[in-house]
Structure formats: structure tokens, C-alpha cells
Image (tube, rainbow, N blue to C red):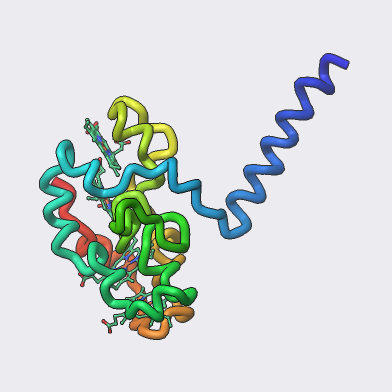
Length: 152
Ligand code: HEC
Ligand code: HEC
Ligand code: HEC
Ligand code: HEC
């Protein structure tokens, strides 16, 4: 009896984890994100470098009509539709948390690093950089990762 009550959650956790890593994981809910502006005060130079890249303005490439289509999924952060507040699209473009994981908890308390992805790998990039996008030009992680932002 005792073994069952302990083993069941463990088996469930392993099953859930396997599903999570093998299937295309759904994005965490919008509330788990705190969006790029909130990272700025502590990660100033990275923020400034990122803000000059096309990732920061990727939503602007889409017309209003195309933003209503599935196009938007690869041109925003997190949930694959607009997350708006007071007329502002909070998840516009490819922001920090698209690559580093939803980080509201870390932004509130920087000692919290749970769920933070320190060095994002190629697989996350290839969720968007693939031939499902109509403008795909090929993707080479080692050549392209240094264009994302400087790290010092
Ligand atoms: C209040 C300050 C603060 C805010 C706000 C903040 N960070 Fe951090 N962040 C830190 C500190 C301090 C570290 C640790 C630096 C170190 O150990 O070298 C860190 C480390 C990191 C790391 C590396 C993780 C690791 O394991 O070392 C990432 C990635 C990161 N932050 C992303 C973000 C993102 C994304 C945001 C915005 C959503 C954000 N941070 C907001 C202070 C902050
Ligand atoms: C398109 C994906 C992407 C975006 C957007 C992005 N990063 Fe990164 N970030 C990376 C990659 C990849 C690395 C690791 C580079 C390497 O391996 O040399 C990195 C490295 C870092 C590190 C250094 C971790 C360490 O300790 O070495 C921090 C901190 C960080 N990013 C914070 C941010 C913040 C803050 C933003 C937004 C202003 C941001 N990143 C936007 C992909 C991204
Ligand atoms: C959420 C989707 C998404 C993810 C994830 C993503 N990208 Fe992108 N990336 C885009 C889009 C969309 C553009 C084109 C933006 C534009 O042209 O306005 C782009 C453009 C770029 C560019 C050209 C940037 C410039 O300023 O010229 C580079 C380099 C790049 N991505 C590298 C990466 C790397 C490396 C990763 C992973 C660490 C990554 N991307 C993750 C969607 C994504
Ligand atoms: C699977 C993810 C994905 C989808 C879906 C997607 N895009 Fe993109 N889009 C990207 C990436 C990644 C880039 C950067 C191109 C590259 O460097 O390969 C990009 C770049 C662009 C650009 C800039 C093109 C250029 O040559 O600079 C435009 C415009 C654009 N996309 C429009 C759209 C439209 C319209 C749709 C829907 C019909 C769409 N995208 C759907 C990922 C996607």
C-alpha cells in the first residue's frame, strides 16, 4: 500500500515528462511570462543588443490580416496568439523568454532559476526556423547563435 502511493506519482511524473519532451510542448500560460521590458533593468547590455535585432520587431513583418492567421505563431513569444494589455501586444516578436523559458518568477526574484534555460540549443530555434515558414532561408545554429545578442 505504501509503495503504491509513492510509486504512482513517480510513474505519472515520468510519463508526463516523456510526453512533454517527445510531443511538441504547449507554451506555458501567459501569466508565467513577464516579457522583455522586465528583463531590461538587470540585463541592460543584452537587452540593448537584442532590441536591435529583427527578433524584437518580428511581429511588425506581418500585416493585420496575417496576424489573424497561423503565421503569428512564429512571430510572437510564448502563446501562439496575441497577448494584449491596454492596446499593447505584450508578446510581440521573439523575446528573451521564447529562448530562455517563461521567467516571471526569476524576474520577481533573480535567485530563482527554476525553468530558466541558460544556454538555449538548436531545437528551440528550429521550432520556428524550419520550412513551414514561407520565407525560410535555411538554419545553421553555430553560425547564427552569436547574431541573437551579445552575451557579455
Ligand atoms: C532583478 C534583476 C533581474 C531581472 C529583472 C532579471 N534577471 Fe535574469 N539574472 C539576474 C541575475 C543576478 C542573474 C545571475 C547572473 C549570474 O549568476 O551570472 C541572472 C541570470 C539569468 C540567466 C542565466 C541563468 C543561469 O542559470 O545562470 C538568464 C537566461 C536570465 N537571467 C534571463 C532573464 C530574463 C529572460 C529576464 C526577464 C524575463 C530576467 N532574466 C530578468 C538578474 C535579473
Ligand atoms: C532567439 C533566442 C534568444 C533570445 C530572443 C534571447 N536570447 Fe539570451 N541567449 C540565447 C543563446 C543561444 C545564448 C547562449 C549563447 C552561447 O551559447 O554562447 C544566450 C545567452 C544568454 C545569457 C547568458 C547566459 C550565461 O550565463 O552565459 C543571458 C543572461 C541571456 N541570454 C539573457 C537574455 C535576455 C535578457 C534576453 C532578452 C533581452 C535574451 N537573452 C534574448 C538565445 C536568446
Ligand atoms: C518564435 C519563433 C522563433 C524562434 C524560437 C527563433 N527565431 Fe530567429 N527569427 C524568427 C523570425 C520570425 C525571424 C525574422 C524576423 C524578421 O525578419 O523580422 C527570425 C530571424 C532570425 C535571425 C536574423 C536576425 C536579424 O536581426 O537579422 C537570426 C540570426 C535568427 N533568427 C537566429 C535564431 C536563433 C539562433 C534562434 C535560437 C537560439 C532563433 N532564431 C529562434 C523567429 C524565431
Ligand atoms: C514555422 C514558423 C513560421 C511561420 C508559420 C511563419 N513564419 Fe514568417 N518567418 C519565420 C522565420 C524563422 C523567418 C526568418 C526567415 C529565415 O531567416 O529563415 C520569417 C520571416 C518572415 C518575414 C521576413 C521575410 C524576409 O525575407 O525578411 C515575413 C514578411 C514573414 N516571415 C511573413 C510570414 C507570413 C505572412 C506567414 C504566414 C503565411 C509566416 N511568416 C509564417 C518563421 C515563420
